[in-house]
Image (cartoon, rainbow, N blue to C red; front, side, top):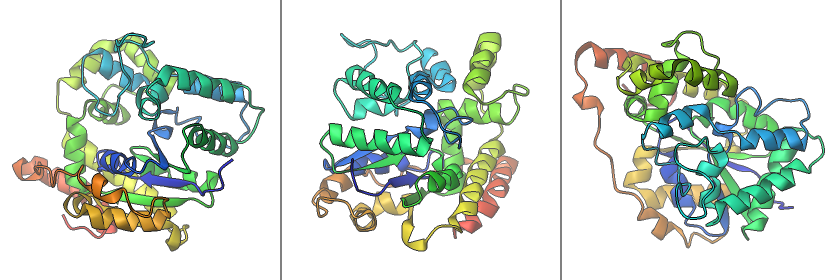
Length: 335
């Protein structure tokens, strides 16, 4: 197995981490795994008790009901790159595609169904072990299987479980990318999966357990409620609070990290000074390639996106800014 340390990119939702992962993927000596952890049921993914390979394989076969709800209604989710409805593809857009197969595996192989089956066969045959051991071995296997020298995992909203990642991977290094909280929150509300997810988490449809079982039951019993949420704009302060909670939960764990293992970068710097930021990340992670990938990766930046906050008026803007204020201060940003 690989001897390289674990590397993670962490952030909130809609913080620019997908762009950063696409940039890092230009380095063909590094395996970038998109969104593996964010799609595994939150009540299972970091449990401490040993898990059998068959149980982990079954979890990896699961869809994420929130993603399925959105895709089947025809909404676009750019992170999902599985070739739905293509000749030879196993799944159609309306099917509950396994999360990892919808997002991560198609970025690793042009034959995602085959690689996914191969990975599940490997996982299913494994004996009972702590999840940390399973995950490390699966990431190492994927890297070796594809001829890469090391791996980086990046999941949206992962800053909130930074402490769990550190527990499972005590020698890991972390790059935290963050964005202006108000802009991140406004982007979340426009993003179909998070528009519904944050509303559900905040009880807009009653008390729903945010688990695979709970969300599947919600769709089965009240699918029309999902339609309504997708067609509306829930209160913006819910998204500001969600962003703030992620930052504050993450920074409760930052205090326990060796400063040498944690690097902060700003989204705004990544898109306006990509070569400088990517060079800093390259050195921090100690990536192979001697930076020969950075110029090509920098070309993926299209500069600063149009800001949404200046278009927000009145009490809605005030509520959003207040929801973000404490976490913005924690990041050294002003509202």
